[in-house]
Length: 171
Image (cartoon, rainbow, N blue to C red):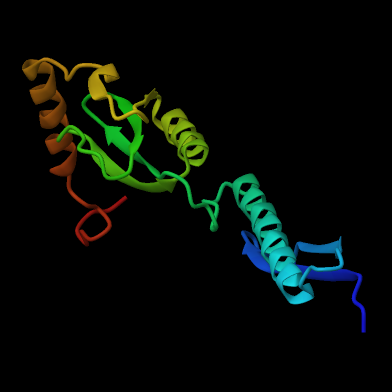
């Protein structure tokens, strides 16, 4: 038997938000030369089809504001600086200033930047790109007097009574 063409494909189903699914499928065909191995060629085609399908799934994840599930590149994190009134995008694993706290956002740079914009809009903070690990771009910490006033105001809010649990309060 003389095999002159090989076809191979990959199909994968991925769950998306709101009970949606995506099921991309890629089929590739190659014409063989006389001395080529059909099995080896099929394996190459399957691997290439798998990569293309997973790239389509990554794109769908990003369109739905999710972290791409098959992303293999460098990762970044989102940091919040309440005193500095900013968010910072930084490389995962870097040493960052102690006044910043990590937000549970991690992924490729464009994904973290997108989520940072969402958070910043909610709080009116600015987003500082520290993706190169340089935190000198951050605004300075406020003067100690202003910082103490901010802390005192937060403590005053924390000391307010919780009316839901108080049975003596009438409205």
